[in-house]
Image 1 (cartoon, one colour):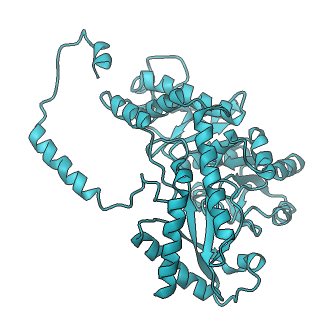
Image 2 (tube, rainbow, N blue to C red):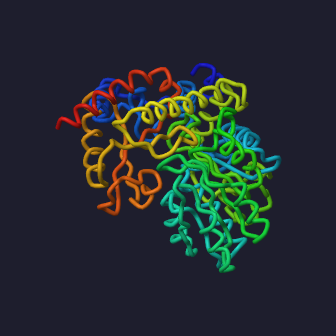
Image 3 (cartoon, rainbow, N blue to C red):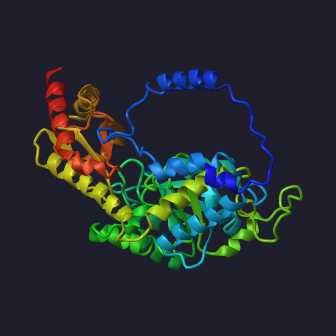
Length: 437
């Protein structure tokens, strides 16, 4: 803190009195209350999309809170606003944008809302399409914006079905297609090259929701199809990426990027009480949000300073470990007759189920395995899927219910690769217990 304080050495002391004893009592209570959680930080937590922030991110975030900057305007976050611009520019370059307009948001929901809002200004009254496996917020955001939304059928690999998309395009009222790169359920990648080709033919905008999968552009070990998706991501009109997922940031930290900087004209507004220290464009003038924590920008800047976003660096190598961990788990499940697998992972999410004769039995056994795994210190997640998708994967399965409960793991910690033997042993013991219940 001393280095930062030196920048304000000419000011007289004005420290607030703090009741340290009472503060310590309250923090002790906080510590006890926070124990009522899953161990998100540990490699044996292999459930939801939860990744601990890197220590440099946490330290930079807390350091900035001594000033508590507000990145709505330079008046509230002079240094942190510049750090945000630099960090966002690094993200844009990683994704292949030579020019861009963008900023950080409170998360992927707000970032996607800005993308859909701009799309509606450019294609007023036209529909937005997204896969039925896209994040549920797209339909909800369209409702908030007063935009018509249609969910497009997905294929057996949970990717947008191109024939279903083409059918919707014949109606002539599609303004935007959302391509998801890393669906929440299965981590699947929509067929972006083909969607972009259709956009050139039909004239709709392409928005890429890469909130989860965007950073995988740096991973060279993806299969040919996945590599082809990320190779063309820069052709999209807008991209969302969430640094609070694979970017090792605290919640909430999302990012919206536009390929055409001129869309900034839709944000223009007059705020005579906010912007007066600079004639330059303020972040608050290219954002729908007002007050925004500058601490998030400082943390992201520090992390990217320590881990540059390049294919040969430690950051990319850690992402590759996540992908390899998912492939390892998939291979083990595929080779074990006690389990059924759905599809090879595009990124680092694996979906599977205990082997059973019917949909109902599969769901029941999945629930049991979820509980027994926790008793063995392994934490996974559940995923509900339409039973119709199971026909192509498991033709012998009796379809006696509309939906099936599966199990799902987001292997988004690089440590998961080194812990895979332990994870597999605990899963195997849990499966034996589930069968004996």
